[in-house]
Amino acid sequence: MSAAVVTAVARDEGHHFSKPTRASIRLLAGLGVEGDAHLGVTVKHRSRVARDPNLPNLRQVHLIHSELHDELRAAGHQVMPGEMGENVTTRGVDLLGLPVGTLLRLGDAAVVEVTGLRNPCAQIDNFQSGLLKRVVGRTEAGELVRLAGVMGVVREGGEIRPGDEIRIELPAEPHRPLDQV
Image (cartoon, rainbow, N blue to C red; front, top):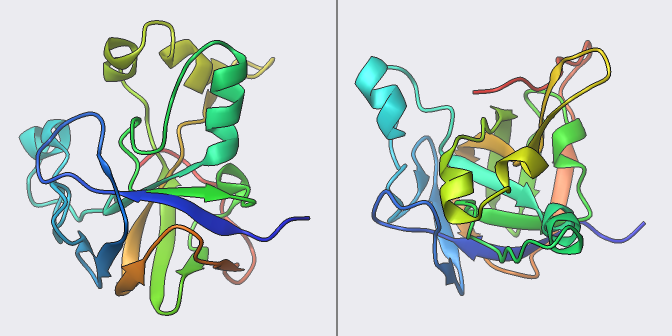
């Protein structure tokens, strides 16, 4: 198996669907990505702020596996890193298969704790028509399957950049599967 690595990093000061990629981003412990619209202890996602602005921000960092971009390209969608709103694009990590509480050590110092799955919304189809049905599906049993990456909180800050190694630390068992956050 190939090494787990960061392939791209992105941030955006505004609440836009896509985020421009950067040479590096800095994660701030307990807050998120420095200079990103979702930075903060409490929720920053606009629909969640409208419901309750005092909820804890479990969506400080959005990670997507570049293998999803590969699958989307094979299905006719051109999606580049950052365009689906992620802060960190990875390769070689089964993000969707990780349990809640997994620690992702990114680069030399940064640590992100995985909190749950991103819940894709209709904005994805505004970005590219038909994309939502590629990142949300159902199992044969009718259970919803979300494929648009995972969310996390910053436990230890640090700068990360493309090419940085990702080290995975699973939480103690029993493992809890990811659900939407």
